[in-house]
Amino acid sequence: MVEISTSILQVKKENIIKTIYNLETAHTDYFHIDVMDGEFVERDTSLYMREYSEYIKQISTVPLDVHLMVSDVKTYILSYESLDPNILTFHIEACKNTQQILDNIKLIKSIGARVGIAIKPDTSINVIKEYLDKIHLCLIMTVEPGKGGQEFLTKTANKIKELKNYIDENNLDIDIEVDGGINDETAKIVKQNGANILVSGSYIINHSFKEQIEKLRKVN
Image 1 (cartoon, rainbow, N blue to C red):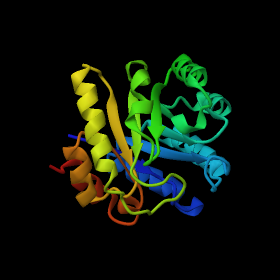
Image 2: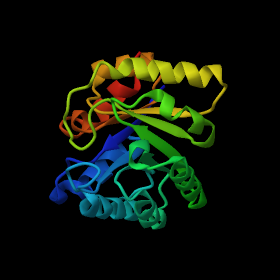
Image 3: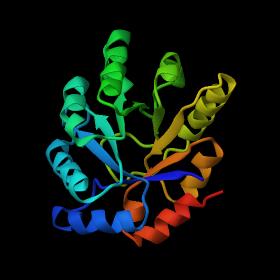
Image 4: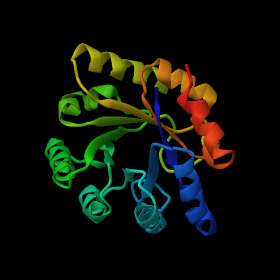
């Protein structure tokens, strides 16, 4: 059965406390925190995502799944250390060289979080293969990062399958997370191709939390 990481990107500030409580009651597995810096992607969500994360840590036991869509990865890793994230994911496209990637992996492990590497829809699986034995999760973007509510890019299904096959062939223990345009129909596609953590925002937030989460969790 897949796990559900609910994105709170589109939740209005006046609703955030109630939303946190209700998502915990609906048994989301993670709160997905979309951290954007206005540089790596156009939108800047860094201040209010930090604020939302602090609220979560004060009133909820549901773990944080932090997705860093930022250029200065190191600074943002350190800024989330005090919030004890379960998962910290950075984009391989934000790194200038192999050493920077390895340094980020080491830093995330040093603060006690699980390490995730994310790739954009047009980035090849080949660029992350050498790091897969060093991390816990690969996040495949199924939309272009930076905006909520986009439609699922069907071309990404083959990437999920390719990654899953590589993981199985090399006996690796790693989660495949997908993010973008996830609903009960696209969830079937990504699960059948090997994903086991689904990020969903508007599909859950704009409807009955519990009902939508259960639909996603039970897809075949």
